[in-house]
Image (cartoon, rainbow, N blue to C red; front, side):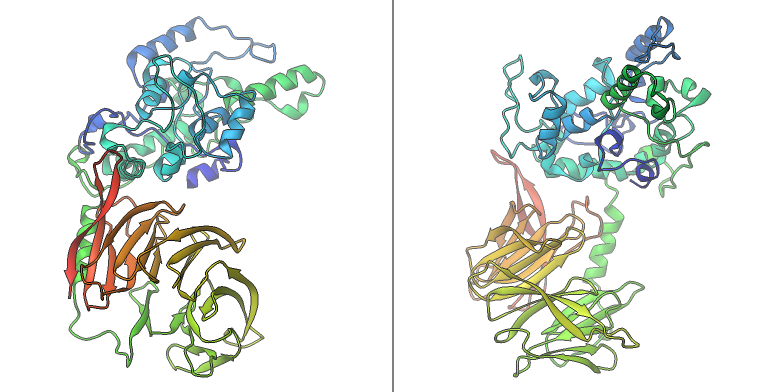
Length: 558
């Protein structure tokens, strides 16, 4: 993404949308083998040269080509008259999601395209772009590596029926994805990060952003496109004398795409990989990390890091091997975590206290009607609180000229209404711009952090909500209701649920999700229950009529 940004690509412009490569060539196997080089696309070649037969057809056409171009003047010969990224390509990939559906219809004149030409299958899209279609050399977009939602037709658009009689709906996935969009994205991302791709990705960078984009190296690499695709090939502002020519040129570029800026004039350096023999690389790039994760969780110290008189309420890793921890009814304040907000006093007051000296710097009274039950710090300026009244209060923390810049004033920004019983827990995510509140009314509500507006409600019918956690990498949300554990995606779809124990008197008090690498299949959810047991859970794909996830406990720690 950094290279795309440097090259002028942006999510805000379909004509200059970020470009990602096809990295796999195997979309038919039951199991994806990342240790086999044949699994991968040849990153040294552009999409038009992936097969010798199609490249030969392009070269033959190149020898006989005389194209006057849309300006009516002669132009240099080229191999490819279409581009690997355009507004239509992006809209066609994202056709099942708004607002891209409407953008596609606008580009297509108000109607969906012929069903056989719509994006409907990963394997067919690869074959079209790499082998069978002379007018298709498209690459991928970033969503193929992080967003499973664009592969499903949740909006139930009527995309039509192919000539074979197949009705278009959700995108057909490769067999190794097990008919699950999340599994496809996870494996696709794992493939992108594997050692084989790391060892060869610089070769693709040379083609798209580097020295093989233009000049003699582009001829040698069979990477020659229509001259109007290149930056600076024509100065639109100088075409004032001929409005027809100007409209034709702009229309050509709009329809067929444009090259990113050339940001490297020399070969890009190869990324260093740990394994010397890439062809024998492990099929999982996360194996070593997973072992380290489990060792760090299960390991113990001879001496306690810190001792408290009461229950531990929050532990935060601040980097540089430093942990900050506070007791119950306290929440650490970012970004330095050297202060905490504390509540639970008989007079319903709250304080801000320094972590090391336990020195009170601010006292607040009358923040809520009744007692505060929970709080969460969004950032150094925003604090969330909730209490006996079923609302969430959003506060702005301000400093008033103190030397140490300690917050001394809380100003109510907004109250969030939606629950029918007291709010019992709060969690927030800056990465996903999200607030999640859990209540004794057995529901969780998702709020937009920027607009401070209601998004959706999650129903957990088994009891009052006791704990919430948001995964900053994936956006998945874990909610706990008595002894039940639920996992939702960021859009509120239930992914999996289970009961941590058969004992009905046990309740989950806290939970946390591992965030080492998002594509690791061994990522876990850790829960701490009132029976004194810490349990580790991971999601597994269960094959049924419709593939779904289930939670299985890999370990218990007493």
